[in-house]
Length: 103
Image (cartoon, rainbow, N blue to C red; front, top):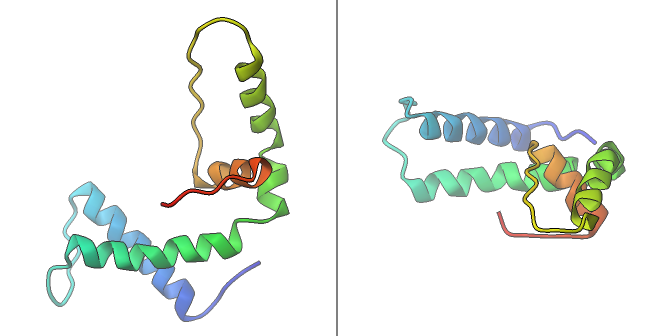
């Protein structure tokens, strides 16, 4: 699935603006953007990802990760296991486990 046009522009612009903000890099706009306005723009990125990334491709790409997570949970004893990944990994695990959360 690919989305083109204005939604893609909004997704990319909001992502770049957010990364600049998070990194402390000045991003020149016609006026300084507020945090609330930034999060309103980032909502486009979340909506875009909900259309493009929540599919069988991401689910199957993360089956091995799910196997490792379930294996770690099945081990007896008290320990902590740390897994890390990217938002695509979270999308895949969410699909496989039928999870949802507010971003």
